[in-house]
Amino acid sequence: MKKVLLIVLLAGLLAFSGLAAKTIGFAVSTLANPFFVSMKEGGEDKAQELGLELIVLDAQDSPERQFSQVQDLIIRNVDVLIINPVDSDAIVSSVLEANAAGIPVITVTRPSNGGVVEQHLDIDNKEAGQLAAMAMAEALNGKGKVAILEGIPGAPSAADRQKGFLDELGKFPGIEVVTSLTANYSREQGANVTEDILQGNPVLQGIYGHNDEMALGAVRSAIAAGRIDELTIVGIDAIDDALAAIRAGEMYATVQQQPFLQMQMAVIAAQRILNGAQVEELVIIPLKLITREQLQ
Image (cartoon, rainbow, N blue to C red):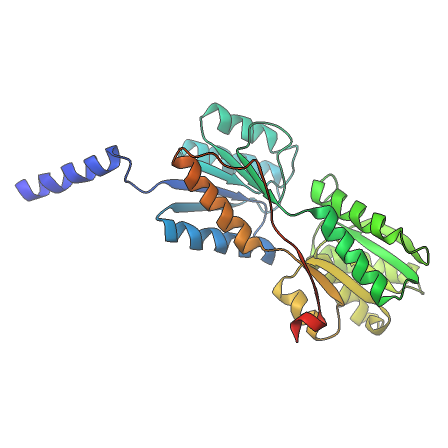
């Protein structure tokens, strides 16, 4: 009886002294995209290493679901909240609720357009667009007609990837953007939109997708239409399927992000916040252009 009582007292002392495992909530936009699966795995890996508990909730690209999930994490009284917003405007109310509850917030990949965020981790999306345009221009020798598959309307990443691409492509007057349509970062929608683009443009030399999922959708439709050999397809993210497509000659290039590293850095920032340390407000993850040459 005394031994059991001693164990209970020790457990209570550990919790009281702050040695109990701290909990991080990760509200992710979707786990249907391999990019965010890699991010989740990076977070889990680093959390385990640091002795932290990571709770991951998948919003399935629904702002309403994400709002409800963040509320759930707040009710669970997580120690730090990491959010990958579905929508940068819609997430503001959730961030404000976390602020009111005294829970520090970190955002990854997409920012929150309001509320107090301790740190935002991202890439330079304009640079990503510029690198994609450089690859496209090189492959086309500065001449040709190009179509664009855009990400989620209103998402800062989509706007910046579009601007970076168009600004860089403006240096090549021989390249014309004939159409730019939304496919919401989805492979399925990328395939459907590309099918329409190919039907409406019998002469087309290139397709740029704001991410690899849409670029891979373009690959699927281009193969089905028998036009894959005439198209230079470029994406962003360097997911495994895209790298395989580059090796197979179906895609020309992708821009490598590092979602695994990005989430690991977010978890490290969360631990620093828990320890009372200051963190940088903005952390930019390096980018790299990947073509077949880099994969050999």
